[in-house]
Length: 169
Image 1 (tube, rainbow, N blue to C red):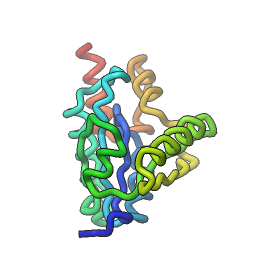
Image 2: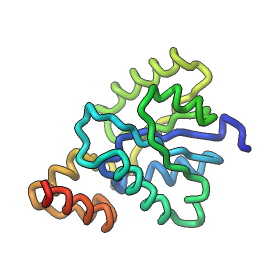
Image 3: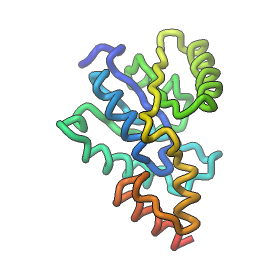
């Protein structure tokens, strides 16, 4: 078993998983012995996909990671406090991606609250790569809903599922 400090949790709704998420996953995996992608139930965000569908999509994308990186990644769902979930899986690090300055204030407050709840947990922030800074799941869904091309933001399999979800609604 790896040290708790080398296990990280990357939480999110992943509705759907984008190239930006995958960039953070790849980079975090290089720094950690194990990365647990924690797919949040987060019904308050009214997700396009159900929790099981989102977990399946994330697993499908993780399987495609290069150089055997997928062996270092586990995908799980959660519906409780993030710090409690992280503790339950032996994580010592929470990984968060930042796209822009607007993300920072919210993420900074969240990291502060998490530190108060579980001081032994560290939060690390990874800046989105330049080519992914503008991608958000919300924008990808809106572009898709309005008939735009989302192929540069998500994988072909995710695009197919997203397009089908809008056709059926």
